[in-house]
Length: 203
Ligand SMILES: N[C@@H](CCC(=O)N[C@@H](CS)C(=O)NCC(=O)O)C(=O)O
Image (cartoon, rainbow, N blue to C red; front, top):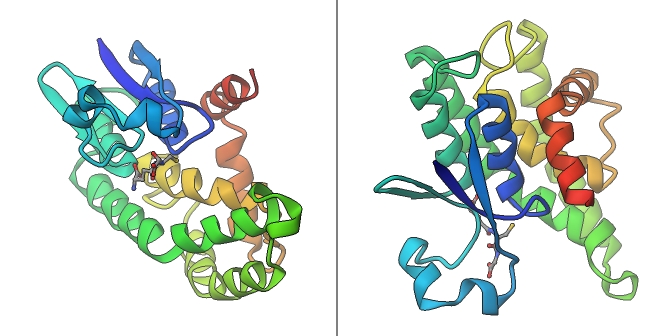
């Protein structure tokens, strides 16, 4: 059985979402982001970064949320299975989202929602929102050509990018100037598999 270490309120959410889409049974070993949970010799053997998520599948141990999801998309048959073209596009969009959007979205989330109000700095949030303009325009243009990022159907390319952009929703990122991104993100986040993981996060 597949084992995922993490929790649904962390980046492990992306992998839980993928596992739910793939429909494979898995066990979640709850790990918080606290040092006493992650900085143990036992866990560091699995993930030397002492971060979540980590996936264990038999002898294979994988970390990095995007890589875990790309692996699952190659391994299992079904609607989430990625052939070479979809896999290539999914890798492209996943690396792109991690490099071009994740840090900015995290900054936005910190200064709009996560930090205690008295330590938030509105200028950080404004800067992040401004710099997100370039990648969001690129995404909006890509979505003008087809319904999803790797073709007409939802794939791991959409899941990985939407799993990161979901932070924008939580941070009240203004998507009104990127109508296709807003509509696509709503479609991705309306999927039953995503909703199941969000329910677990609220429990
Ligand atoms: N690039 C990694 C980032 C993993 C990551 O930073 N996870 C956070 C939780 S969302 C974590 O484990 N933080 C604990 C720490 O940095 O000490 C991925 O996408 O899997």
